[in-house]
Image 1: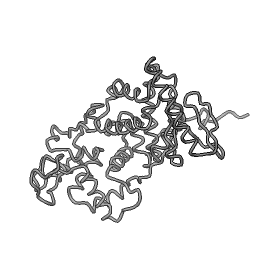
Image 2: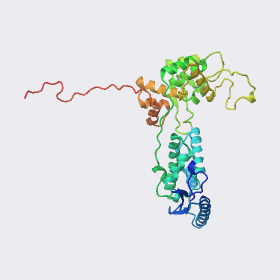
Image 3: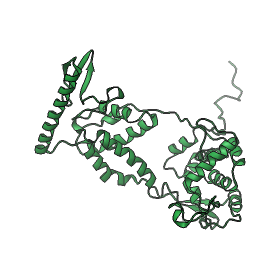
Image 4: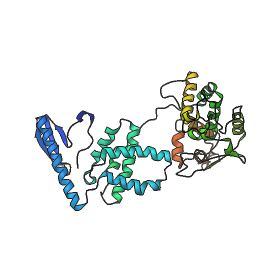
Length: 372
């Protein structure tokens, strides 16, 4: 029942108190009736806090008797228990969404569902982040949570779905083939192997550094993408083309390692001081790959605002496959996406391939007609 998240200009104001011309007004959180509170700021603030305390106490007493005052936190509980298990998210995706769910709990958790309005949701979305993309994601998750409340019969409609759909434009530059080649030329051998693997297989950064030589057998590279391992159960059997085989051959250098992408550490460290995520001293961690790509990009003189990252190799590889004749569905399968819609997002910004079509022959065209 208490007020919504305040804008920065009214930070510290009591809930349900608003400016009104040259004074203040109090809006009842349930009936929405507004009452003039005068021009004295101190008195208006004190009265608003007293009203909030009284209304909160009354709500608690009614809820104790009826047990009907469900809050957003109750909807979150249902979402976690009954909804999330069926979504089959991967571990990383689940962790990312959990961060947003917790923010919703902190910002709106104690709000009674019966009085939760569209404005409550809209003001929280704007106050919680200034990122258009962040607002879009929060709106999506909040809508999922409140949909559970609708399904439980706690509310009749979902106020989150009526809020503004935030649109954002990607700022990171797309990686072109020319830029890829320039960065590759400035990269060390092991990074070149990683870049080539990502370009040919469309694997994500974490999967590229996790590949081992043991994954190569029976004429294929066998991969279970980490992002889908606990969700869609995508398993990839990537055929060893001559180009991919050449990359794997170059990866077998003088450094003995179980990992295809590997390097000797710059400093030898005792076992107890090594990174916990590293199980072999030649293993390259994902963040090391990211930093090395950035260094090579700068060395190539290509550092700029919103410069492409290693992850952009994945979309470049997909675009090149499309240009070579692959269908969107084939690229989707290699990328391990659940839908072609997501694949299209990855390829957006790259030149679409030309479609070869056979022109039709309208009736009468090319035929000698009768003279009038």
